[in-house]
Amino acid sequence: MLNEIFSEFDRIARKHGLEKIKTIGDAYMAVAGVPIDCEDHAEKAAAFALDVIEYMKIYRQTSNSELQIRVGLHCGKAIAGVIGENKFAYDLWGDSVNTASRMESHGEGKDSRE
Image 1 (cartoon, one colour):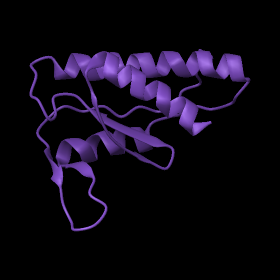
Image 2 (tube, rainbow, N blue to C red):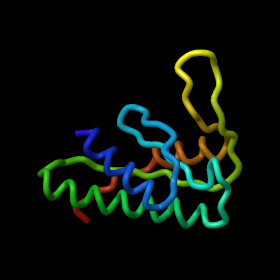
Image 3 (spheres, rainbow, N blue to C red):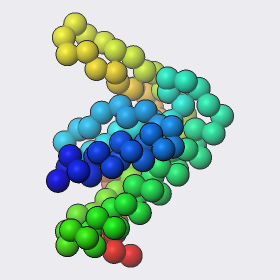
Image 4 (spheres, one colour):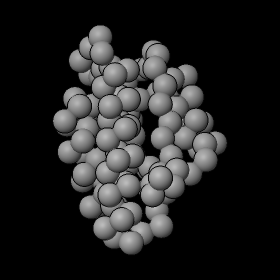
């Protein structure tokens, strides 16, 4: 189920020019404006979020699922790169990342049937 949903999120990320950073359990992290800076990063991220929410509305209806979705979105400076010696993974850090994460984790679940 997560593979199906995240594969669609990957498609939506490509559509809007976002870079998928990683999945963390049932969370999906993507960023606009990295690694290539762009002036319209906020618009791209917002369009991605809206399309993800819309996709989940359709998914709930067609799969008869009770899944809910929460989105955390923030703009600002971040640091990106690869650290460590094993299992190299591109990652993102900074106050903007932390704020978006807190917005998502403290938000109410969105009933995608609305």
